[in-house]
Length: 69
Length: 271
Ligand SMILES: Cc1ncc(C[n+]2csc(CCOP(=O)(O)OP(=O)(O)O)c2C)c(N)n1
Ligand code: SF4
Ligand code: SF4
Ligand code: SF4
Ligand SMILES: [Mg+2]
Image (cartoon, rainbow over all chains, first blue to last red; front, side, top):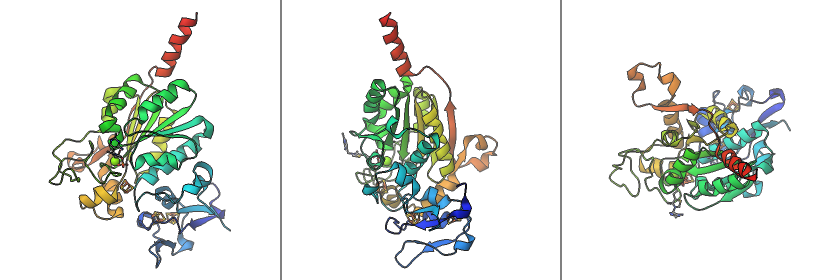
């Protein structure tokens, strides 16, 4: 989805995540999961293809591709 | 770091928003902002108008000119905004109850006039805000607090209703099919004349719970599996179409737009 995927990585804003599970269920690479607070967490950053589908379907703006910090 | 869309197009101090976990409305709201971004519209030239309902809370979060009006009347207010300021991109956000029950008359007449408004219907098949009463789009036999033994009404197909009334752009999609939703909303905004995108949303809290539709993910999976593009469906054998709902772009044609006709009358009288 973004032009310069090399420099992008998934960011999670845990405070805004409501734990609905949409991003986890429909991630094509199944790299996301729940943490002990019932919020989303990145389990396998290596295998994330940065397709951005999690970002497009998150109703809460809590997961997105952004620059590496 | 924040979501890039939130930084640019939303009132960040209002977040996190009030919608329930897994409510589809947030997905549609984001799609509208992405379409505006893609079209490169000047934020000051966009006006987002809503009625009352969970869906109608959206403009409160969106950083444009915004109007949160009364239940069912979003299109009436928007008609006034558009006639007074034809240069504005006026986008109406309206729930299935807001748009097709109390506001149904405004819908058919806005469509009939072909006025240049873009209407995005957040259709979750229920009155979410008031606790799950059935709406004109609740499927027959489904339950609501006002239909505890099942709804006996036939549901409206809002897209076909708008087309029947004269809409010149109408499309239907779902919160699962986000890429398609982005495309349709973009086309609807660009369209000159009355345009409608019926975005099928999910209300896990009331519609989902009352009708035993399972988890948020189950409700999204249902959308994924049950909606087919009508152009694809044409080529499918009858047995594969059973139980499916049609989505896609259903009409896209050019006809004279209302505010232009109105300005034409004013100009003709000046001579
Ligand atoms: C004149 C008037 N009648 C009734 C109501 C109560 N009311 C508020 S929201 C709503 C329906 C909301 O349903 P919908 O438009 O589908 O939006 P949703 O909450 O499902 O997104 C109703 C009946 C009202 N606020 N004003
Ligand atoms: S960007 Fe794609 S692969 Fe990576 S977590 Fe999101 S959905 Fe999964
Ligand atoms: S889709 Fe959004 S709110 Fe839902 S679990 Fe994922 S990050 Fe959290
Ligand atoms: S009641 Fe339904 S429509 Fe309203 S915020 Fe909750 S899930 Fe969304
Ligand atoms: Mg509704």
